[in-house]
Length: 574
Image (cartoon, rainbow, N blue to C red):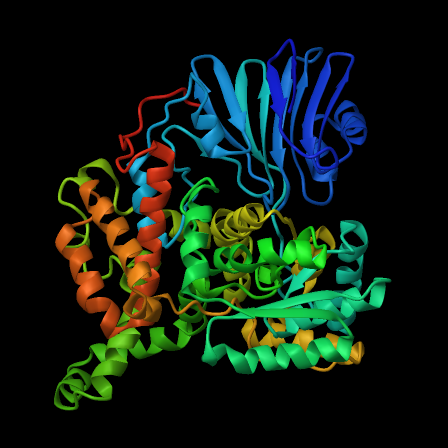
């Protein structure tokens, strides 16, 4: 730990010597992760707050200039390293961890009930931090303090070329990935493979540019993953990599839940969380691997994830559905649908659902709240929250995207929401629990710029698949499988088969019921009936709620965390 005081404030830095640095010169103090502090100082002297736009790569920094009487906080274009801040009187407090910021004597440590509702609604943490009064810098944002005022500035956002017709786009992908690997400097990183084209291309590029054989890893959760593991094994033999694989069982997950609850600035419920903590601690010593790449985590600049799929698909078909709406509203077709309950009734229901506003569509797809909050949420809890806030925020983000095509809008929503708020924190926390450093080559600036210049036809699930396959053929590295996601954890099935895991989930949901957030009868019904009916769907719900309770218990020191509505705080000018 290194700390220093300054005329404008004080900074404490806890980081490895090669990751974070403190820099002082002539009234200037810089605490940074990522860029060289002397280069950042030169940019500040020449460009001021515009220095953020001139930086490249992954970074986060705090800068204080006593001569100008200014300060600047900033994160990179993907917010790969977060920064949280809050007002406290006439002071501005900040930290790279929400939990660390909450421990400051001048910061309230209460849990924000609106953040808990956002977590339940979104299936993960939202833009609102879990602690009351805190705010978080979004990707491509900085906070500029000058003349007693605080200004939150968006210095970068992705601007898409909607009608680009690039020749040989796969060559651009190869060049961008080569640049990313050259600047990362992590030749010894282990590659966690899922068998899809993104991981196959990354493995081929590592074998092409690295002197040592590539270290590849794979894991599965049972018999249904063995076909994927066999294809990953065959691909690793073609590349000549040092390959290891392992089948994860319920005992690994039980230990991983405890480790994950201790890390992270919020409950971690996304699939990228689960894999590294289950195997990496054991394999790190065996394979001498200090860093981890997971290709299913970051390539969202070419294909948005499942979280934005309903937005993208409904927008693609909106023109056709708008023409059909008047037809379905006519008496003739209404009578036809009433007389032929299937398939016309189902078709009419789908068309009407897709024509509904975006927040309504999202609410209908929410596996926890789609049946109505009254039967799920404790009657006293809605008085503390705004139930429409998360849907309204998503709707605003969708329509404010600097893109026209639905696929680019979905990618923008992914890069601003799901990736920095839920996926990256989950993967980073899992790597931290395993003692590994996360490496994210697909989030390099060169690849982001390349993705922005590609036309929409090269993106989305089918377009990205073709693009990666073309790149693999150009490298003569074969093809990946059709799967490019973390292996599916059969948590719902294990809940029914493993008594210890069921006891852990039951105790967690029982403690959660005592917090008066969710109804006890709903939680009892979830374990007793819903999980046996649909283990995959409702097993995910149990995992989400279990991680919420474990996180709350860890942050409070017992099983009853303090949950209070946010207090009035210093209003920072936008």
